[in-house]
Amino acid sequence: MPLHLLTGAGSGIGAALAARLHARGDDLVLLARNPGRARELEAAFPGAQTVVADLATPGRLSWALSKQHLPARIDSLIHVAGVVDLGPVADLPAALWESQLSVNLVGPAELTRLLLPLVRMSKGQIVFVNSGAGLRANPEWAAYAASKHGLKALADALRAEEAPHGVRVSSVYPGRTATPMQARVHQQEGKEYDAAAFIDADSVATSILTVLDLPRDAQITDLSIRPGV
Image (tube, rainbow, N blue to C red; front, side, top):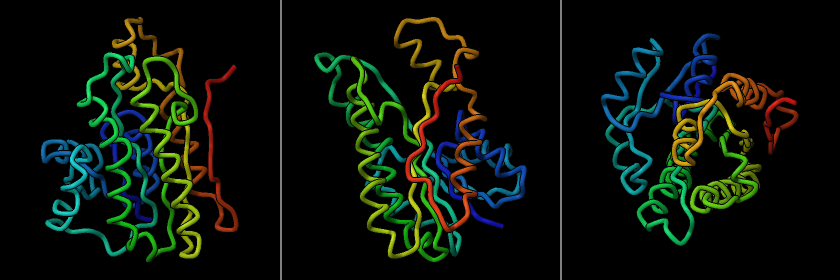
């Protein structure tokens, strides 16, 4: 069975995707930011392996991974984890820029660098779950959008670099999705949250599975998901 390494499997889109992959019998390696989170993921997805490493500290990822067992190959590396803190540029402190850039961009870049030999081994694929904010920037979204625009640049460059190695690279851009992160965004915006108004996380998971399962004679480079009419 194919082996997938996922970040963000504990909530939202990542949890929905992990559930779909687990249900069909694929092998999972789930990145957890701490041992407590790892135990929660192991309970939620019996048989899955967990690896403890925190994307918020990209410089320590190499050390963290070196202390743990990794699979011999990775068929797909799927970046789903992310954080968001809103605010106008005039008010947003450096710490909130740094945290979003670390988790949303520098962490994925470093994790990709470290695991790329294992993805190349299987001529696998790398999927970056981006955001509509990776294609446009709205007021008070500067830091988050900057991290996601950067993630698009990372994917585009990596795609060209890894084509000779047979590695596919895709970006998925979901619109607003009904997740705990979306509830937090609404709290920051001072708006009432109604999950029914947004894309279901399982619908986004379906789109990611389409990217993963596409026959090898083609690749989906960029896929935008928007709410139904």
